[in-house]
Length: 126
Image 1 (cartoon, rainbow, N blue to C red):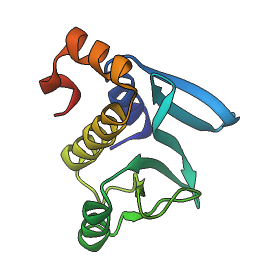
Image 2 (cartoon, rainbow, N blue to C red):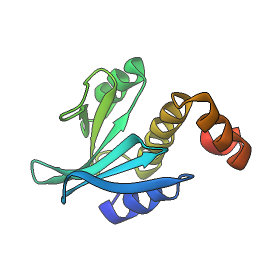
Image 3 (tube, helix red, strand yellow):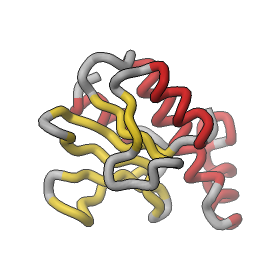
């Protein structure tokens, strides 16, 4: 997956915004003020940090050479996905959806319920 395509996919999630709180070359994607992804460069390769269930995070690292422990993140809950062609596009999209869903589930009840009413659980937690 190319960086521009991933950026468009990230911004297509309900109420997702792009922010640059760290540096101009590190895009942070948030929903209701909570980060669910980053998009930057890791050792010369475009990459994205995505939140993940700890057991699944390790399984993905075991399966794909382009999935490594989250760079500058809690390595138990975040993976860095290298956009080097080793991870299929559909799998990156699934990881984005999972990251987004985990963050939405962790929102305050009023924020989570407002999203669920506006978009439906099937869209938020796919």
